[in-house]
Every structure is written in C-alpha cells, then in structure tokens.
Image 1 (spheres, rainbow, N blue to C red):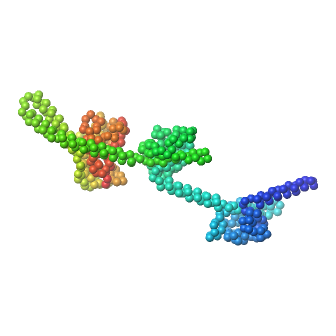
Image 2 (image 1 turned 180 degrees about the vertical axis):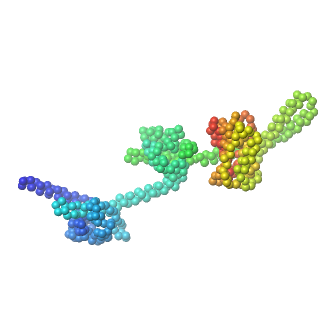
Image 3 (image 1 turned 180 degrees about the horizontal axis):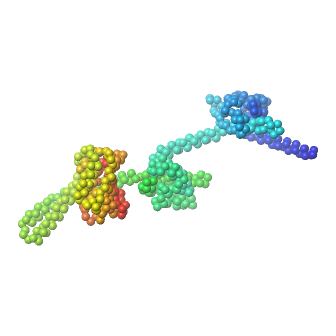
Length: 488
C-alpha cells in the first residue's frame, strides 16, 4: 500500500513536470484566471511579451494588466471571452486588434477554456492568446487579390472559361454569360460539351492527351472553332488555351472571342470589293453592247418590213425577240452599275410589304403559293426610299417562289431592332449550299436554269445605299431566310 502511494506520487510529479514543460514551452501566451478575472498563473511567453515578472502579475486583474499595454476591456463587455465562457460554460474564441491607433495593430485570437476542479468544484479559466497578424494580413491580401481578379474577369469583353480534368466548368465570367446566353449557375460543374460539342472540337481527347504526355501542343496558340449558344445558334469563335497545375491537379482556361460580327464584316467587305470590281467591268460591257444592239434591232426591223417570205419573217422575229431580251438585260445592268440616288422620306415598312403582297396576289395562285405576313404592330417609320425597297422585296420573294418547284409558302416578318427595322423573308424551297450562299449577291451568279442572276445583286446595292445590311441563312432542303436590316 505504501509502495503504491509512492509510485502514484512519482507519476503525479512526472505529469506535473510534463505539463509545466508544455505550459512554458509553447509559443502561445497562456493565462489562468478565476471567475473574477484575478490572474492565478501565466506562462513564460506571456511574461516575455510584456517584460514583466510573475510576481508583478499574479493576483492582479486581467484587464488591469491588459490596459497597461493598450487593450481596454472589462468583464462585463460582450467581447470579453471570460464573460461568455462563464455564461455558456463552453469554449469561447474571439479575435481582436491589439495596440493603440497610432501603433501597428496586431491581430490576436483569444481562446477561453472553462475548467472545473473535480474535488472542490472551483471554476478556473484558461486563456490562450495567439498572434494571428501574419495570417490576417495574408488572408486580407488573398481577399484583395481575389476581388481584383474577379473585377478583371467580370469586366473583360472576352469569355473566360475554366474546366478541371473531368471537363467540368469551374469558371464562367460575365462575358461568357453574354456570349453563350447561359447564367453562371446553370453551367458551373457541367460538362463543356454544352458550349462546344465534340463535333466542333474534341476537348476530352485534348485533355486526355495532355495529361498523358504533358505536352502543351496547343497552349498559347489561337484556334478557330465553332461554338453553341443556349438558343441553339452556332457561331465562330477564336480560342486561346492555358493551363495551371496545383497539388498535381490541372485546370485548363480558355479565353474565347466571339468573331461572328468580325466574320460578317469580312464577308461584307470581300463581297463589296468583288461587286465593285465586277460593276466596273459590267458598266464597260453594257456601254459597248448598247449601241450595236440598237443598230442590229433597227436594221432587223427594217428588213422584216420589206420581206414577203414568211419563213424569213419568223427568223427575223426570233432575232428581234433576242435583241429585246438583250436590251432588257443591258437595262438591268444599268440598274446594277449605277449609283442610286434615293428619294428618301419617312415611311412605314409594313405599308411596303402590303403593297408587295397585293402585287403577288394577282400573279401567283394563293392556294399554291400562300404568302403570310407577320408584321410588327406600331413599327417605327424610317427614312428610306419605299419604291426602291419595294423592288428589293419583290426580287427576294420572286427568288423564293422560283426556289419552290411545286408549291410552298412565303413568310414575311417585320420587327424592330436596336438601330431601325428588320425584314425577314422566308421560303420553303430547296435551300442554298454553304458554297453558293457566299456568291448569291454577285451579278450573273444563279443556281437556276432561268434568270439573269441580277435581282439579288441589285437588291444588295439598294440596301447598301440605304446604309443597311442584306444577308441570307439557309438549310439545304428546308428553305432560305433573307434578312434586311435598315437604319432608322
């Protein structure tokens, strides 16, 4: 029994020595107080930080010691961890600034632990103080950097999209929302396929190859691809890639530029240059043909009147018919090559459409070629030459009817757009191939057996003279839609 007490006493001494070593060896300040805030013990770090002796601290109120070094508090303060620990009986943690306003402020985390004696039931409180200034400053710098990065991303005009190794979207900036039509919440953690389907660029294969070989073959290079908007529209993009590795995990970031407007402008410029070059040649040819045609036609008519041979008269009639056709062609060439002097006035485009529909109602049977109008109400009047625009609509509708071999409907839609009025003319014809659609506004270019190939070229020049745009979109076998945009 005596031996057992001896060993128990030795164990207690060892435990006390162990605890004392931890108490004075830790890098945090430790203070033991009672429920009234009287200091019962402090460790070496607490004393070294304040350059005080233990005798100068023990028995003093904790807030008196703290006031000596610029921290003012009272036990009844809500921020006092002792007050809350006494009330709740649980661990309490607070962080506060230490130091006067003129001094450098430290950030201290104070953790208060309530401890009760098993024998006496007396309650003590152990406060551990940690200097978290460096952690706070690092966190503040991180937050500032994140805020700056977010501001850059959200003010960028190009889409910035990041995916992880599983092809899941992890970053989607404001420009990406505007370009693709999706809200950020709708695409985060979704597969990139919703924006760039595999048929337009197999990103899964690219990521797999990169992770296997670690060769950034396409990094830093601009690639041209086709992407997909939320409404189903396909559009051209230019894409630059980069990657980032952290803790063995890779993130791939793409900067994407919507080049659909740029492509249209390039096509428009190229078409205008081609039309200008062709126009110069056509004007010269038309001038050279006009005089000989008049002579051939005039003399043929005189010869016809002097002949009595019926067979010869018929042959001359054929010559005169062809001369007449060539004269009409030359007249059309004149329409194409001339500079249009528009007679502009405020006009309602819907009225132009109604006039065109009246004309066609007497030409094409409505049961075979029904023509529907979906005209916007209260459409803004625009400054235009309505007679010239009527010719544009007639030319396009005529092309649409001729593209529908047996039957089909023509739909004309008007709507407002940001800068004026838009007209859409839709047919149910055979459609136009991607190769042909680029040339349809060039003179003499036609995919039909009959027709001069000048109607659309003339229409393009009239719309261009109005400062507008004319283009076509087509699906082979389903039909074609012509778009006319006119400024206000």
